[in-house]
Image 1 (cartoon, rainbow, N blue to C red):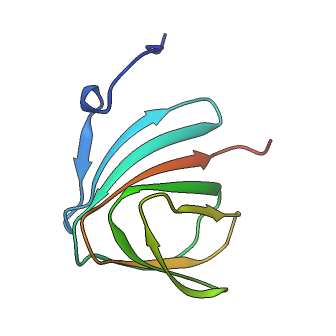
Image 2 (cartoon, rainbow, N blue to C red; image 1 turned 90 degrees about the horizontal axis):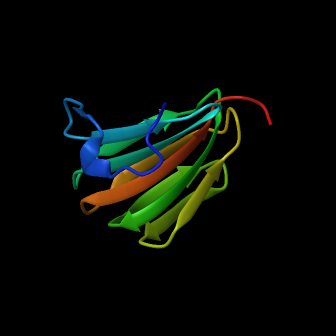
Length: 105
């Protein structure tokens, strides 16, 4: 049984070669992921086979989608439907919370 109460520090951290650190709480049909992105990281254009919501907790950058390029900062929220391409440039260290829906609702 999964813990009903946890902290991000209780979750295992994975760190990619570019320094992006992730901690995940998996669920049935969804996952919650805390992502810390170092300043200067570029996320190349990509898409997902799942719906994704992203809340910017701190930091700033530029988000690019089919709707154009727009700056983001703390308080911004992204919504990416299945297959929607997006890219980002992170100007400062940025903390994100991703909600990934892994099954159809």
